[in-house]
Amino acid sequence: MTKPAGGRVGKRLKRILILLPYAIRHPGVSVDELAKKFGVKRSDLFDDLNLVFMCGLPGYGPGDLIDVSLEEDRVYVRMADYFGMPLRLTPAEALALYAGGQALSELPDMAEADALRGGLRKLGRALGASEGEAAGISVELQHGPDHHLSVLRQALVAKKQVDLEYFSASRGVITRRTVDPWGLIAALGRWYLVAHDYSSSDERMFRTDRMKRVEMKDTSVGVEGNFEAQRYRGAFSGIGDTTVVLEISPAAARWFEDYYPVVRAETLADGWRRVELTTGGEMWGAMLLLRLGRDARSVAPAALVIRAKELAATISQRHLD
Image 1: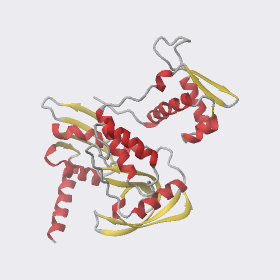
Image 2: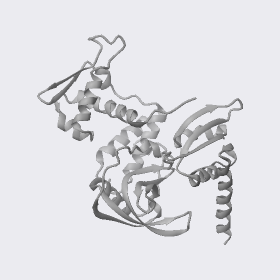
Image 3: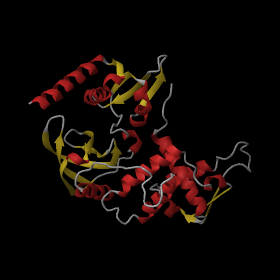
Image 4: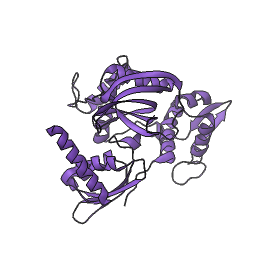
């Protein structure tokens, strides 16, 4: 059985692992500068530094622990040179980073991102691409008009509400929504807006290429403190109260857990894999079953299979009309 790490602890660990190399490279950086750069409150930063002070190499004697000191509100981190070593990526990690960087570079307002493009050229050469090539990788994310993404990014930075005219594929109609934007997610070749939707009084994901109109309002919104982009891989939030258990084929198992927030998983004797995940309702689960097709079996609850058949019949009828 496996269970992926995440939540507040995982988020804090990632922040510390990024924060430490920066503090080592910038001895004497001020607490305020460090807090601002990593988007953390001073009190949380002090908690992070106090935790680091108790970490180190095995042996954990005075000479093995990381030395963190504060001198006149300036941070010094010593005896942690291993955090300053160059990052070593596996080929798969480098490829994923390159693809993600390419996708970001194509966003509106990224024309001046020279540092990003320079980093991508270096990473591309490391992956075997010659000058001017793209390492054999082509990344195309469908996002609709550039203006829509630009407005959404502005709203996220300014923490403002957004009005949408949105095409609902499940109902085949254009709806008007007022939302509090939480983040933009790239998943399954498309951009999604994750937001609190006032029409449903719940969290929703909106495909940006289905937005017909996007307008930023003057109303300020609060920041979603528990927002974690990792939960939305595969355009699937994994938030809700419906537990789904199913078995997936070896072919689907190669990619499934990279896209969906699986809670538990185990490999069966015949090579199939039993997985458990949480959804926000039957519609999500039904769409998942349609996507898997013959690669899914032994689905629970059984009502989900019925819902998937109904959805398939509805889609088929619409194509015939």
